[in-house]
Length: 445
Image 1 (cartoon, rainbow, N blue to C red):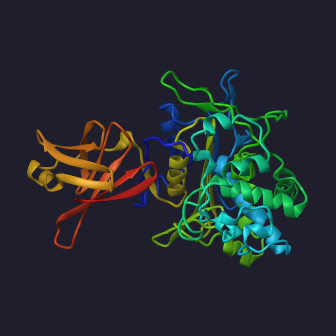
Image 2 (image 1 turned 90 degrees about the vertical axis):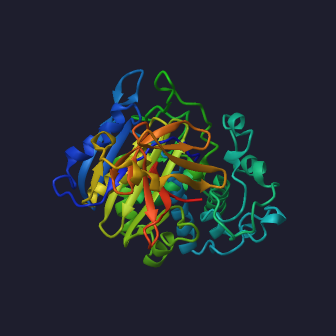
Image 3 (image 1 turned 45 degrees about the vertical axis):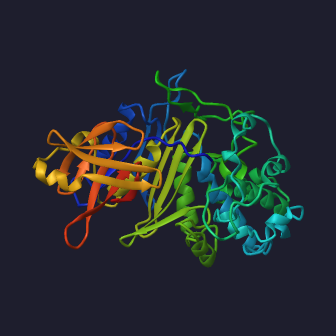
């Protein structure tokens, strides 16, 4: 459901390194780097179609009993759940129960008038403009209270839309709560029963389901959050809250069955599957993000819920699946997912401790001095001090940038890199901050 932010980056170098490509020992080293820093605990799986390249658990499913994580450990998925909800809706469409471009009011007649132009597709693509209830100021206190669809919807139904439906992308768990209600209304089943009977059972996913505090669930991981003194038990959240936005649990091995079954055409017709992975706005399709970079496609979604962060990624052309399920909150699963996908594709991953600083003359460093705007109120200021290039983010300390190659520098205090860009004349005109698995452009002011 919610996203837990922190400073981190997997540094990716795409120059081929055959000795490292798809090497399980290298994959283990990349994951263990985060484990040893106390940033990751969970289970990881990498496969090409049905060939499992890497399958390993790290740390404990339960720290109090020191029970190890492995491929059969059940983790809460957080927003990875959304693709299951999207497929449930698409199945109902194939069965003639709904139309994606019909107004939500068609299926939820008591919807407020302000939603008259909101369609099912808008909910699926986070383009409805309905405010995200998990961002409300009282969410921290209300997340512990049992809820029904009606009581959850009541939290946001009378709020004004943030923009006209279809106008832009804005991530909203509220839309997926409404989709859960539509699934129940049109199927006559609970959301949990519908996904179990129509998604999990056909694919043999016996270790997946809708999580519940009351149920006795063998091999379920406990969730933890970081603190200055080490992991602590995560906050409680009633599992009646996330619903189709983030309430499912699964294992790495079950999620491989999901990827192979879904993209292998076992659940949806070809045209419906194509619609699922067609971006609508800002790279978001139906329950998944789709990125096409340099002709390489990645279908991915991450998840974050109290005590758990997750990532599920797929390369449809190479049939590569990467699953990273963590029971310690933090950005590591998303970062590791990108690194492992790079390795599985035959690329190389450079770990922070493997970076070597080069030498750059002070007069060359002066080319980079200036202010680089990442956002209207957030910038990176570069200056040369005692023959070193220093960087300072708005409101933060100043740190040294170490040169790695021409126009590319790295920090040692965090796993992040800065790449400077030039115009046709060779003048430095901007920078790209590579951090947290993202590449963020920053024009020079």
